[in-house]
Image (cartoon, rainbow, N blue to C red; front, side, top):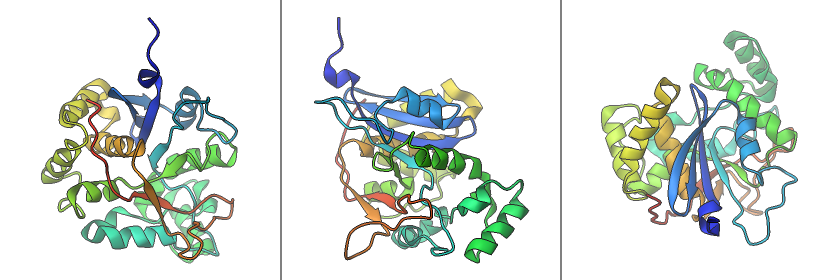
Length: 266
């Protein structure tokens, strides 16, 4: 028997980089699935409609992919991204979770010391080890966007802590990798998916050391928020409402929830 349309449609995809590659939480009307992709392109290939030239079929939902990864990058004319500054202000005690990404020239360097030196040459700022550790992941997404395999209108940079703050009514109290932090975010997720904690446990059993608890929680909150909820763009020009562009023409913005609708994909 042919599946009904609502079973086939993907309503939202939340993605987080992890030890094993890219963890995607894929939300449909009746369920949420976790899938691990070794490279970003394999995720794009499995979900047509995310590319710059892809046109969704008539009558289908236009899928959005919400990803916890920087897209528009700093450059000489914009050494600090306005969206990072605004996200830190909104997150208050969790502001340290927003770190500045490398400029594009630093992405191809061989080690942290050289990358930091190049970043300082271009932007006047060094590069944190946290930012350097995700440079290969940033490069994957950046190449996909610049080469048209991903569309910046459908592949959206997000920060999970902003979504948890919306669920919690304010920034999380505890760091996400602490025991209390897991409990705090796990309870928040149950408002969107009543079996959220069990679904995360299942994913961790399935993928083992390739994923961490916070990878699952971050991907899940983005997937559940990505289907129906209106998003605002941090760092946009207050007059035009448009975000600035980086040296490659990609938008420099972090998408955040205006508010969160309650859902239960089980």
